[in-house]
Amino acid sequence: MSDLFTLPAFVAYLGLGILYFVAFVVTYIWITPQREMALIREGNLSAAISLGGAAIGFVQPLASAIAHSVSLTDLAIWGLVAWVVQLLTHLVLRLMIHDLRGRIEADVRSVALFVAVVAACVGTINAAAMTY
Image (tube, rainbow, N blue to C red):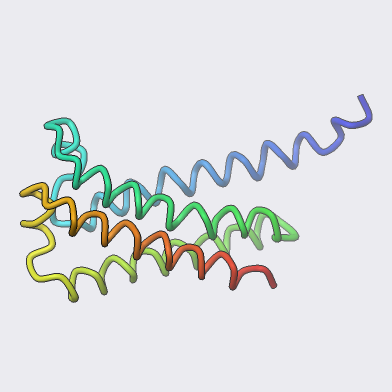
């Protein structure tokens, strides 16, 4: 039973990580002009790909922050950094890709895959930068 002394910290870090993940996905869905969940329910693979890429791009640095943080406050701060970087990535992609909303809604998978890959790549760089 002495091995379980870190269980409260595990639960706290896991809980904050899940809370951040859910809050990020809700925020991402809120800031994008297309309605991802409705599109996904209708079978639009592009919406699922682009949302999934953003989620992965956020979770990678969040996981790095969880692994390297020294406290819940430290995790909270670096989690917010990951959040902001991923939202800025989406905003840059919206500027780069003409009519991103229309292309996602039209289920143009090449565009969705590009958006997802860029989000995941930026997330990977962000995660590596958090190895302080």
